[in-house]
Image 1 (tube, rainbow, N blue to C red):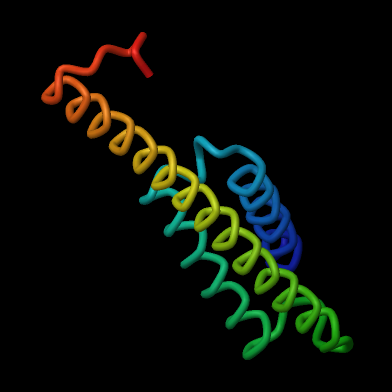
Image 2: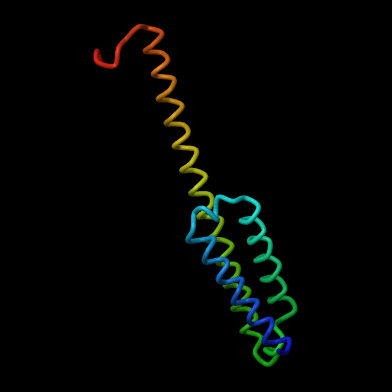
Length: 115
């Protein structure tokens, strides 16, 4: 297998990994995996734009499209992660608020049935 084919298959593998991270919340929540994929995307996008893709020297627009596609995946993945983190914080805040309210009711001697 020549170098251009290897690079092409590696880009496909990275795009599949991006789709998995974007579509599976369990992978998005794994901080090390998530940021590793984002750093890989940044490196590959910069490399594709700056150095080009082997085998596509005659069409530099292909390198730009691949670089910008990886940039799009960076943005999508970070937006998905921030939405999950925000959702997790909201659930945690609601649980904490409900627990504090229960403690206050218990301290005041108010039963749940009296509300």
